[in-house]
Length: 120
Image 1 (cartoon, helix red, strand yellow):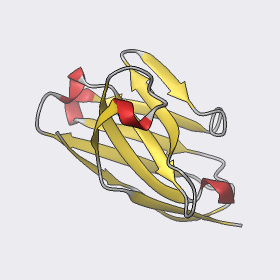
Image 2 (cartoon, one colour):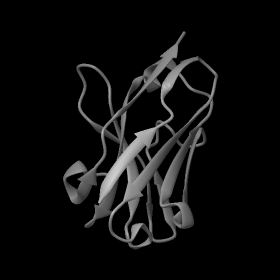
Image 3 (cartoon, one colour):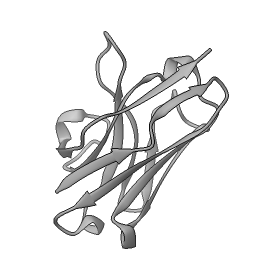
């Protein structure tokens, strides 16, 4: 599975962005999908995931970010509203989950990152 993330950019605090993750290769619908992010000088952290029909969110984004997927388009989305400067990071889409979605090592496929920068 190859994952291609897009939709990042520069936005002012309080603004919105929508990231897309398009998959090619094997049947996308069979995989859990998710997002991680990494800010400069910080560890990679879990953002959101869809595992079967359940959604998971980091506490820091709950109520502001919403994840969805369109299996017909082989694409997952991360709608980010109410963006804050601390959301600035490179965002990575992931697929193929083994167990706990919040652990980076449990994901089998990683896409290239998409930069999100939120100015204050």
